[in-house]
Length: 359
Image (cartoon, rainbow, N blue to C red; front, side, top):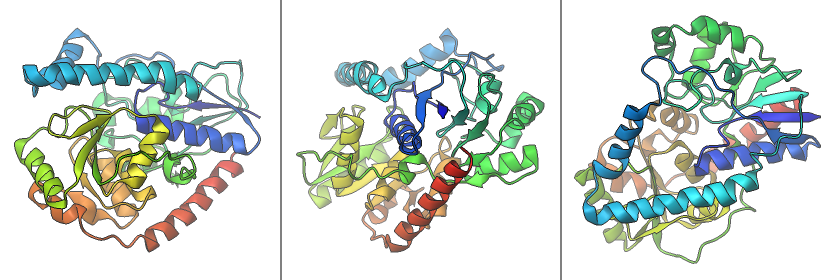
């Protein structure tokens, strides 16, 4: 069977790479041919245009708003290395530019925030991401997420009818978080399947490449996230008490001891061997859970929906840090991973069954 995967595969992001690789490899393990489908250009919704004003604002926020002259150059240097490695090594390895099929027997939409139009993307709003795929005999989704797109946001932009029309073409719908579950119920009046992210579904343990470093805490975040003095001081204080160095994966933080830009499989190794993980990203939590690590999740407005859903699903809501003064107590608290791992095994079987039954 010729299968296309419609995902966020072009994004320079470790989580996006790992979820795309996991889904593609899983489908290929069933004996099928797989390649990625490019997102068709849509129309930017009012207020979500990726114009010059937005781009300048993002550059200022990322590089200038909380940078000094001393930190601006190294931050830019690491960003360039990160972008170059993704463009020249990681994304080609994923096979994002391999397009050999004119038509697909099946297209799988997912995972990641494929249903989230409430962001400034280069492609805008496109019905293709919701099921209106013209060159496919059959279309399903797997662990798709609406991200920050709620029913209120959908009605605010007046796209309910267009979403219903596109998603009604899906033979089967699978989502990965409770907000997405609620949105699909509201739009289509039916229950979608609830499945775990491909990174949790896939056996990545044999892919993880161990680093040389020991006695460290991983900081897994984005450039414009951990910036407040209280947050930084609390994290540094905990690291000092524990005698651990702070290693930031991908992005440069002057208050961390080291910044690394490894291969995605090496990222897994850094996570697997970390003494603690501090993150404010969905896949940072996913990898923490996968490798049974002590971790703290900094929950913010931008990640509230998906982070809370993930933590609640695995009975780990106490790992959410809403008060930065409590981060040390949260990250150092023991976790009984036995029920978590039991649930992961059940969810793995459920996910494989969902994919196989809908091929």
